[in-house]
Image 1 (cartoon, rainbow, N blue to C red):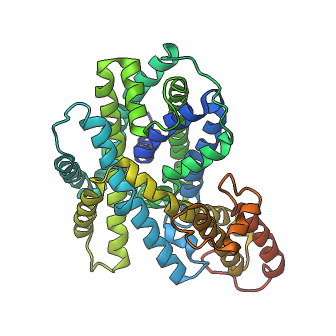
Image 2 (image 1 turned 90 degrees about the vertical axis):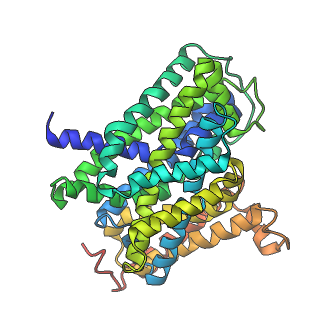
Length: 436
């Protein structure tokens, strides 16, 4: 096998493993359970935001030299810094990293070893993370060569068994908006946000293997293709298994409980062990990638005043504290935050991909701030404890298109992009970074 082919496969497997974390395991079966025979439509939505957007994010960052901060620079330095810090805190110590530990405990440890305290396990979990994180140059190879094959084999056994020997017939649940729900649940994977971070690891890994910058995009696309094909297949398989449970469990079933039941009903007592292995590997590889990226980011942000190893330890300690609160609490807390961050991230990714057409940075600013404004207003309107004062202006959003599906920000953002592009794009305020 050629060296380049081998490297592409290893990086592709590593990307798959880093993306396939806690949310990727617990949300697809839950969507399948809710929509039953319509699970394919929800799978389309979930794959678009859970697979398509992450790939576009990596491609966008690769276009700007692998540094995700570059995609925000046309907006301005203050915006870039605030967005970057918000992004790393969200997919780092506040939400994504603690969720990996909590999910691992609830699905992999507690069912088999119920006497093990959550706090004790979470401490052990992050201590093991540090063993990998403190050796960042080996992260891609360790994940790609050893951990991903274990994950793929385990999930394949579960999915194949469930497809050929279903636990129950798939029924029509009558639930509406399967595609929109799939799109929104794809937010919860946080993969589009993580892609902006992981892209720098991929970029540096390819360069470290001796390839020139001119080959980075090609290798990134090929590695990304391996990752997204694997993710799409696994998501579809898990949703199919979840759809088989619609007649057994109601929509109020716990996400972690549902996944555990699926594994036990398909594989018997060994199901808990196998799903525990899958959970452990999936969550572990994701948290390793996030802690490593976050540690590097805050080291660069502070010009070395907060060194990589110190950041890794601090993030792990925060992960221990929040990770002990449980999966459902973390997921509930994450919703409003992701509903604000995701529209901005999506808008920035798309604008970066078409950067050659945009000659004026004000087009970036108008478009991104529009997505931010409407995502904030929509979140306030939809979350009861935020919309305490029942503000009429905010409640007018309920009359706009796509409000019920959670995408009220889309049309205003597109409209303002068209308007700003038409009126401002010929003005000479082009960024040197985005010059062609």
